[in-house]
Amino acid sequence: MGFVMDSKDIQRSLSRIAQEILESNDGAERLLLVGIHSGGVPIAQRLAKLIGQAEGEMPAVGEMDITLYRDDLYTGLEKPVLGETKLPTQLRGVHLVLVDDVLFTGRTVRAALDEVMDYGRPARIQLAVLIDRGHRELPIAANFVGRRLDTEMGDKVLVNAASSPAASDNVSIDKAEEGPQ
Amino acid sequence: MNRKDMLGLRGVSREEITEILDTADRFRAVGERRIKKVPTLRGRTVVSLFFENSTRTKVSFDLAAKRLSADGVGISASTSSAKKGETLMDTARNINAMQPDAVIMRHSCAGAPHMLARAFPFSVINAGDGINEHPSQGLLDMLTMRQNIGDLEGKTVAIVGDVYHSRVARSNIYGLTTMGARVLVAGPGTMCRPEMDRLGVEVRHSIDEVLEESDVLMMLRIQRERLAPGMLASSREYSEFYGLDLQRLARAGEKTLVMHPGPINRGVEMSPDVADHAQSVILEQVTNGLAVRMALLFLLLGGEGGQDA
Image 1 (cartoon, each protein chain N blue to C red):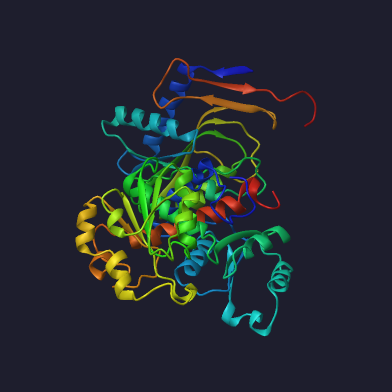
Image 2 (tube, rainbow over the protein chains, first blue to last red):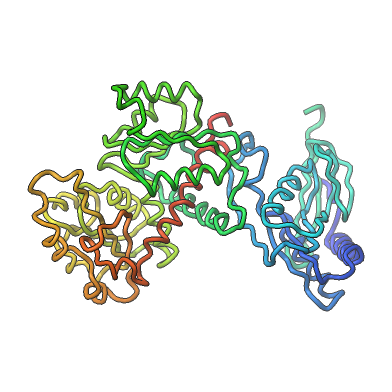
């Protein structure tokens, strides 16, 4: 297990992403940050706080569970457990930023895009992730990235970040066993 | 939940019931969206096979399948080849040959869905088998109670009327006792027998004996189609001893919930002003029915429980 980010690294990355989101959207007025269950939810809350500190006004924050939109519901190994989708505002005209902890195959983001469309028609949708670990299986890219990591397909990237900054926050890679998988 | 079928609430654990109700809570939120459809069961086929009349249950299951993007077709007895003398097993073999993923079934014989569930690979959901069980109704009743009065543990639910012929009552009794609720049953001696205490309920013989103690009054319809001659003297007499009117509701207290699985016979088991009363949650039950049926289809056909997982 190798640690790649500590709590200060994470906070610095999120601060930069918060600034980039503000720049790209001309402020926080029309912003809606939506964390994808479960890892994206605390990241979205932290980004919202950072944006609030910078602008003096908290952007809207929501959360989204994409289970019903997954493409592997019948082949996935885990039993489906439904989480909650909570969007605080109408989507028409908002600048929606999907937030996740790790961007990997892109399939989760595909599902989230479909679900957003069922709730309404935002003016634009962007994607912010703390970690981009590569291995995309769909043509999806993030607008805002904390850190890009070189990983093997079988590695596990573990993000441990609470909704408020804590000394125990970290990102680590659990390397896959040697040899082809 | 790791089951192929949902045939009844007898033997279904507290954890499973809680999982179904929690999942149904999520699906209620889908019903409140502008676009009420999710792609979850795209490409799955759900056949509803109704050998007894139904409006609520059939529409509810059909809509549940549609809102999950499954393809649904319905067969009802009046239009099926059963009229031409085909046996149930032959009907089921033919349906199975078209590779459905789930069959929703209602039949006048207790155990008919169980027979199909044993014989075929598709998931079977019992939508009412004779006087045995109607599990999705029991679940939607428990969901409605949970939303209105909270945790079912320690709550008192009175089921009033023709308990003997009621599959709704039986599913509620199994489910509620599993969840730790106390169940009272009250009805005429012909429809509410002393030996029912073996199901873990307390038997009373007048609605007046349950009013004060109950958090929920579940009123049942007299099922004339199942009554033997002599079981019921007259509707008026029944209404006198077992009907819920405003005076009795007042004695029960203003926190008591009034429920009914429908269809209501207004003026028999409850007066019209009780049916439309603020304490009546009869239409909430219908809304919850759709959510519960979506949850059942999702849990039986999605994930590891699915057949080709």
